[in-house]
Length: 123
Image (tube, rainbow, N blue to C red):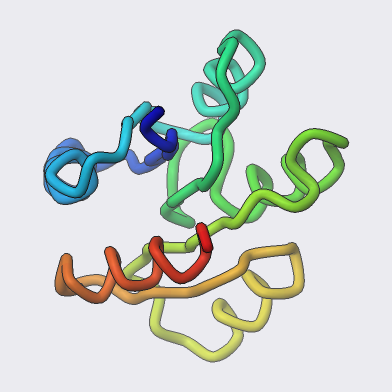
């Protein structure tokens, strides 16, 4: 059974690139364009989301709020979450880790680095 990863980003280009990279490695990918859509998809899915990759700056519900919401949920308290963002600042990274992210990657990124991080977090 393929492991399911949720990719949340308001950039269709990023979603396409990340999804393509993950699917090529055999992962099942679910996508959302912002935090609100991500929460709706998670709550309506039958299978478990085993990892979340999220941007920070998105409309409706940003990445920080999405992570906080997931961490308050019994089902997703331990789900690995990778922040994938263009925010390079130490404050953003620190805040991301404080709200519960497992990892923080900055765009632009190499798919090999992302896949290595995914693999490490899913072990």
